[in-house]
Image (cartoon, rainbow, N blue to C red; front, side):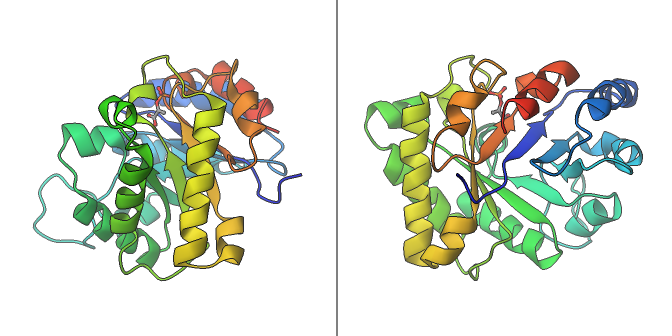
Length: 251
Ligand code: PEP
């Protein structure tokens, strides 16, 4: 029996207008009334945050953002601050998603600033790490994940307010999920690192999620693994019925 409560997070990426977000909420929320056994969050694009929050008021579902800047305010055209996310009703924020690392050039140093800012302003950081296909083929997955984690957490005091998502880049949006065994191997490696760097007690309480082509057909295989406590779901979270099914099958 796991001591950690499952956590299922929807990452909508750059999808859904206000109307589409509203229609998702109308279909999804009645299917996840019981918030006792699992934590659920939806991370819409910035433009939908406040609107989605208005539907979540009487539900156990939390609101999250997909990214943020690390300063509170200022001359940073196009950026959104942690204070603005809290103001819009967010409780969590995805940080260091591989699409931001690879397409937008986010570095480990930037990710480190974001993790610190999230903690400072009371947002739960969902820190994403994961290797590319080439790195996996070269047997460097652990080395890459260790470096990403180490740099993202540089100077971060030990805390329970952190979720780690292990997302192998080659498994994201590809339909090719990692095997539950490979995902468990890295999740357990991550928990071990956190036990070494912080302590065993905290590490045993942190939630480590898997992400990469999670769907209703494979979620329970991941949830059976000792060190996997939930999932960050992209494609399959866009459909309210699939995401509700993933939530249902995760407990
Ligand atoms: C993601 O965006 O974090 C993700 C895991 O996407 P997908 O589920 O589509 O692979």
